[in-house]
Image (cartoon, rainbow, N blue to C red; front, side):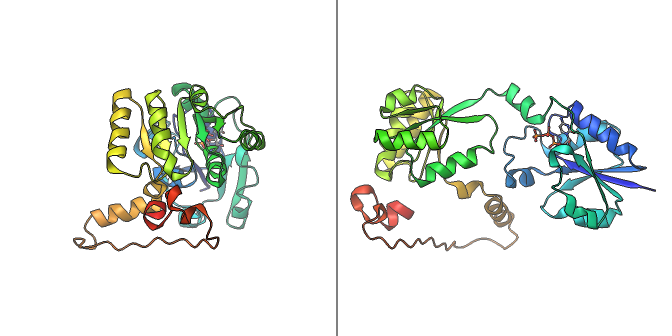
Length: 303
Ligand code: CTP
């Protein structure tokens, strides 16, 4: 009995997936298919998977090609599965060529030619139009945001705003952005959504102007420096029917979500208090983080 094992997201099951499963099946007597869980996909940057794990597993089942369907939950699980199920062959599409050579220690590794012209990413893009996004600000965090955005389908960063023409031009050029502006309204007109990454004391005003122009806003923390300002922003967003989100990325980290859901399940009893610490060491005492005029200080900078 020769066992073949393969893995994938299998979102919006398409002919590329079918071809791969059919050929994989032919390499042995039994085929095991590992389907990635939502949290595993998120942790490796696949953020826009459309179907739930259950739907994707069901679609694989319906192909009639898999003898066993398992969940792939963790990086490094493949070695464990190969041993557990006694897999003789590990199969994956040629887009992964070379990446799984380390499994040769455990079984045969076969890269099958990928079917050309079809992918889940393309199918997702066809269903959801691309959101053109601009970045207001061009500091360190803006560069990191740009790099990270490449992992998200359906988002394209096209423009950057900054007040200093020379600096904003340099940022646009070094990140191959199509447009840069020193006029905020002109910049807003080019995009559907804006990521606000300017110094804190400017967040409220720039978020407000973007929302009033009907743009979705992802704003660095703190969204505003006073409660009534934040409430006003959410009111405008609701009136305009656009998304307003504060960029509290910790809330979206899989480990944090796991922590809050475990805590919520009551597994450690009823929670009486939460004690958290967040510190940051900045040696340069002239830095923005120390300047109250720029909303620096322990509360507005870190709080
Ligand atoms: N596959 C293939 N031919 C395609 C698309 C996928 O042979 N045109 C293979 C992949 O190489 C992998 C398996 O199908 O072995 C599952 O791939 P998955 O990542 O789920 O599919 P993609 O369509 O590549 O998804 P995405 O665009 O989200 O990366």
